[in-house]
Image (tube, rainbow, N blue to C red; front, side, top):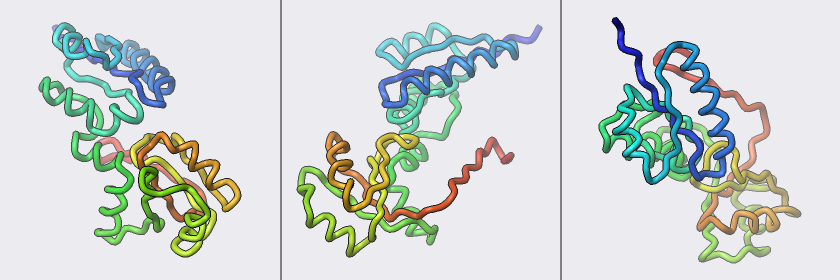
Length: 196
């Protein structure tokens, strides 16, 4: 008799994408149950390691979104428990989530990417000098976004009139990326193993 594979679905968390993650986890668990897997759903709280040890999953399905789910943090926790999991590993997750590090890799490997600079709130004041700097380095419109958030959380396309207002919305971050705006269609390609 074949033993049922046990899948622990991690979802929820504390990122700004919590609700999306909970919905993802619920749908993943539903499909896994239809396909006869033994499934448990779990949030990454302070009891996570105890839950992993008790359930003894064959694999953890990472349905977490954003910070602490896609940035290498939860991957490091799972690796410390020697548990197999879906998603990229610790280093690749960390690099991919950090937009500044990713940009440096693109430039080094001659991959086309919009020009940018980092704006640090603790050093720079949000004022008209910034508008002059953007005009000189990038031109308007520009895209402003946190360096380490998932999806399009707190991403704004800004012109001269709304830049300062939108930057103030991001002042909870220590620094943000200000990037040249490239108009066009967004295309995504999902890859599973060697299949597109």
